[in-house]
Image (cartoon, rainbow, N blue to C red; front, side):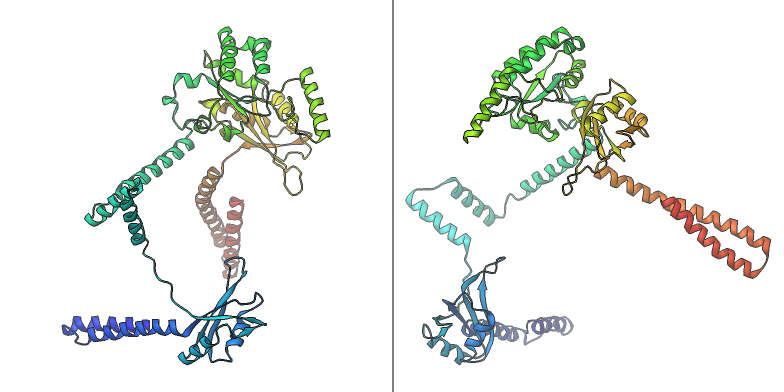
Length: 502
């Protein structure tokens, strides 16, 4: 009916355009409105609401129960969304008004499965005007003198809507600017900008370049981790660190580490700004500013993945914790647990994004260990090449190695030399293939470039094959031989394209 009415309207508009008007348009509109009102009324009249239904009632049983009264057009039981749990009520639609009246007379008299049910006239849900309801509540609060800022904002918005001067353009501008900023940030990161701050090397301050991050400390309320006293003692006594850094830097490390450990460690905002947690830092984080920029790399190489020897105090603590666990009490955590080691990285610069300088080792033996990979890199590449991290993926279902590993460096030079010198070398008795590890985005871009370049090669090979076969055809001079040569030329072209694509 609605489709027919729409079609009639279109025809009326066409007639008005051709003849300059149509007299029956207003009458037809009035009749259409009357029909809509009558259909709404009939729907309200012909539907009944059935409550107090047994939970075993289905749509079919409900229809069968009410079909004894009259012709039922539809019957359904209400259920919860997703779970299909019975809600204890339903709706029945009759074909005639008289059947509805008969059903209403059986309210709390009719039984389904030995249970009396209630039958009421169904009504359409009234459309709630939330704006009007909000306005009335606001007026009531104004009469009591309990106005809030939200009420003032709502009044201002209503006035703006009446005047037609809404401020919808400002948030749109803000959202567009934020999207553009995020896009520019992604572009800067893909072009090699500093991953720590999202800024280029020119905008990095001298203090940031001289700052080193040390994490894994038992400070700031952390239950586990390396104690700050051990780190300070290490800065004072480690001969290797003192030889590689200046005397001023060694003093600064001790002083600033003592000062910062007494105060609060780096907050979450700082960690989020420089992406410290994303690179694997755990527990307490400390930012130490050095005297020279050259000493940052040395401190990172010495402190990253550093584990301390177990002291007498640690052994005593382990014994106390063991006794507490035996009694069922909660222990205070081991002072020198296996997973408690220091984590270090440069704040900004080249060493701030070790994941960017990663290589992948393929065809790796399943029994290869991290120590074997580090030893082979030190033997084949260079002893000075610092391996920041070695990641060996494991299959979650079989709990076995997947046959490859990722090695991260803090400089691009070490990563390039690893690819050149380690490729074809043996690791754990097996020859490995080494290549630069690409991200998913970079891998897709390389695949697209390869796909765009391969058709050109295929076309050239195809043409060469046709030219060679045409020369053979001229030498033979027979029609049958020409046909055979044409077939072989098409096969030659296909083979060349398959070899180039592979």
